[in-house]
Amino acid sequence: MSRLAHSRLSNTALSVLDLAPIRQGGSASDTFKETVALAQQAERLGFSRYWLAEHHNIDGIASAATSVLIGHVAGQTSTIRVGSGGIMLPNHPPLVIAEQFGTLATLYPNRIDLGLGRAPGSDGATMAAMRRNPQAGINDFPERLDELRGYLDEASPGQRVKAIPGQGTQVPTWLLGSSDYSARLAARLGLPFAFAAQFAPAQLLEALRVYRENFQPSAVLDAPYAMVGLPVIAAESDLHAQYLATTAQQKFLNLIRGRPTRSLPPVEALDWNARERAQVEQFLGAAVIGGPETVRQGLENVLEHTGADELMLHTDVFAQQDRLQSYEIVADAWRS
Picture 1 (cartoon, rainbow, N blue to C red):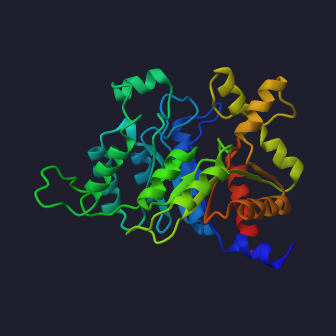
Picture 2: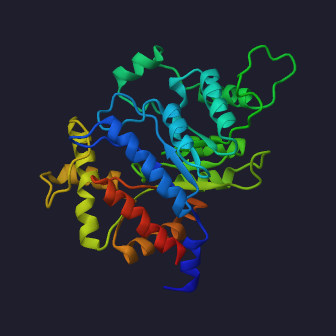
Picture 3: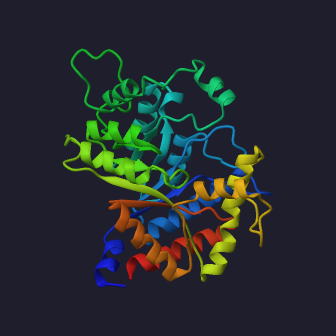
């Protein structure tokens, strides 16, 4: 491997995406303790951000009250940026999100990120329970985003409704997506963009192209800034990493089958048909899985093909110790 290839990874910011998984036989309380431990390790290893994602009515994910969990993690760490990857804005009044993240930014200055998406983060029935109006966020996402950003900016003359706290906090706002919709909007507004290749990699390169080609400089950014979410599992060998990866494969398989998605122990072989296997492999198409050198080369290849400014790694394995070790291995590759 060339020295240039090594430098690409070592010069790229790395961050952590935590979906707060609940394992079989575990509890949400266990998950929250492990989330804090992982965030503290990520901070010690020099990762830039620690993001949590909003999901609802999903048995295997404990981050439904995303802003509450962000505050808990920020309070148990000191320097790492903590944020949402993301908040599903159509589920909430923009004023409420501005108040929540304005409060977080006031408690933890210069450490809070607000990543925003427009998907429901749930099934149709749960979406209806939250939104009431089933059309919310489908066509009015840009207007909701403008309203939210207005509550985080300096107050306008004569502004009657203000986010207190929130107004003037300028919480950094990111747009998240798995298609080119948010890429186009982020480009038009001059905002940073994060692509969710950790579960939907198909349109990754096209979305990044659209974002960069259409980017308009803003008060936030002079040039495009693209982050790529990525499934990564590192272990002492390729074989063991592939074994650990069966936890994530089982999760997507159960999602396809409409079954509970709590984390399951790894298995030697999966009982799936050809169609199911193809679907699971599509979800995990961008995954980097292997021993230290395989993971190093895999991350270098992702950076070479995407030109990403930052990678946000999601490691979905059953045992907490394996998750911690995976990030340690990545950090060793990153520093070398």
